[in-house]
Length: 433
Image 1 (spheres, rainbow, N blue to C red):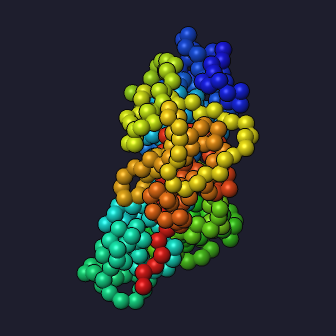
Image 2: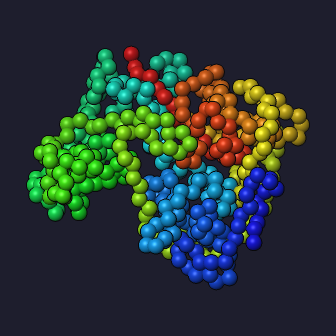
Image 3: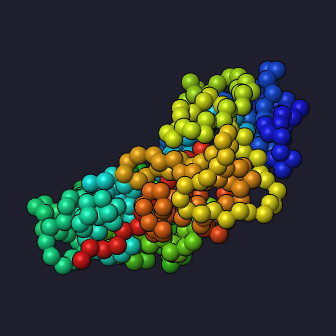
């Protein structure tokens, strides 16, 4: 049995099968399950709950947890597939897109919130803590600088790498590293090791709880040795057969510097950022999804959303309906011109909702037809976003949709971005004077 969510020939139909739910293990009781791209059948309610649990644990890659000969399937589902197969409502889409983008941004961007305008920002120069907020500067008419470390208005002169002149401006993580207790690592000959380390790849503070000396960072997913601070593979290779007991290198002293995560890779299209290290991921156990979040019935088909009146300038509440996201065939594109879109009476506006600037959402008009909307390039969209939100022809920022950083050379249809999709914006700031 198949159900078509849209009339587009290019959008594959949903395939329903009779079988158990591979997420919860519930046997077939007359309710058909949707078959995912990996071939495993899932209940649509369970699919939504499982993906929510992944996001709640900090994962932005949505993977299949089905058991295959004692191991997890691990196939990665794209967000558009989950959106379509789970039949997410507009409100659910908005929540998923915002949360996935925030989680993915932690991989692609070293971002913080500007203390004044509340915009999501990252530094162009990672070696200085003196930052000029161009967003506040354009609003105030005068330069506004803040300290990346203490997140207060900048005080002092020059561009010191680790502090400003504000009282108490210091990295609190360094104090934690300097004062943490020591412990003997279980199952090894390593004694008096600091109980807290900064990940040598991304700088995240990690406390050793139990088990062996090898730890997997929950942020960059790089495994390293808690004793010598080498990558796990390098540590093991230098002492074959005895690497659990001790390291070839001596115990690393307390860290006095927090590593800065250098995201040097492109990372477009969901690829891993090139950190020079092996990246691993873990699929949480099924027990980590609470039973109360596992609906037992397949969601009923929802109606189609009604077009928003063209005269409305503010975003209306999202209806409880899933907007169709058909992929279009290749159609000649009409160049997008930054600025207001001119449309005839009754024409529908196709828009995106951009979050991350000044702590609020902004609706950006993109096109007056679905075909032109889907054929719009990310670069054209960025011009429209810059014009509407930064009030200039071009700006230096990153756009993310769900768990992907957008490549300026691709089109919106390549990411299955639909009308009213939520995007996340992270602005790159220069160093201060």
